[in-house]
Image 1: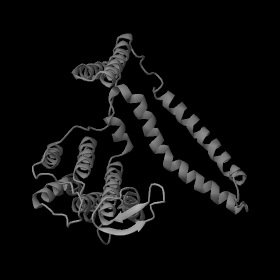
Image 2: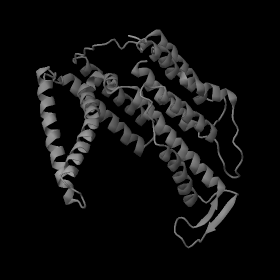
Image 3: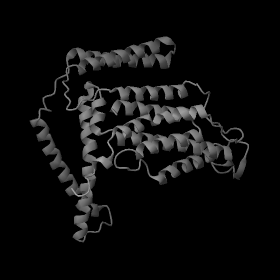
Image 4: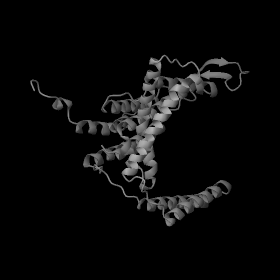
Length: 339
């Protein structure tokens, strides 16, 4: 499954989660994300279970202390308390818990996307105009685990020498070797990249630079006009500036040569999965099943569940199912007994 399909999957899941602020649908989206994560290689968890419980709890407490609305009053805080004084209602607790649960689902959803798509594929999704930025981000994502491993090794070596950090100054023997090792690795990486021709980047042409700057200026003028006067003129200028800016970026990207070791083109299976994702999320987002958002105010009621919307959300399992079916079974990779 290509990175573009997983990117559309992540954006569609986030849009559905935010539009359907509903406890049952949020739990269903959480289950879809966890299933998609567990079918990936390695079987790592997408998010800590403690955080999954902490976010709804924090949302419920925060909203109950700030929104004193609802018919079901559980207790009353003294009105003399600033901001939090007033009735604590079950409706406010429920709405805050659902908001925290939705935020946790978003974290899990994008955690699955990061776990499914390698860093090099993320860099390939970036436009050619941002090839340098994509390269830096890819290197940072690749060096972060190595830096963490090196820090653990330094901590173990210093502990073997009897070093026990008790204050801020005691951390100096840990950070100095880490900084020196990081600078040395960065220097070696820079030399290797220069030897492979990464330093011979093409310069930005004047025409492309003029279009980019002009687009930003036009968009800024349109934004100022929209804030001061309103109307359609400001929005039109902002749209024109954005179009000129994107056109300049597209033209500047044509001068960047890009080669690839493996073919990343869309296969028929990818197109089918992409169509299922767009159809399922579009049906939910464009109101094919009505408004799915749950509002506990003014009286807390049991949330309803529409089977059609739930089945559409289950179609978001298509990328994980397709990729799991495409991977060969490990049983066939194991050597036969006696060999």
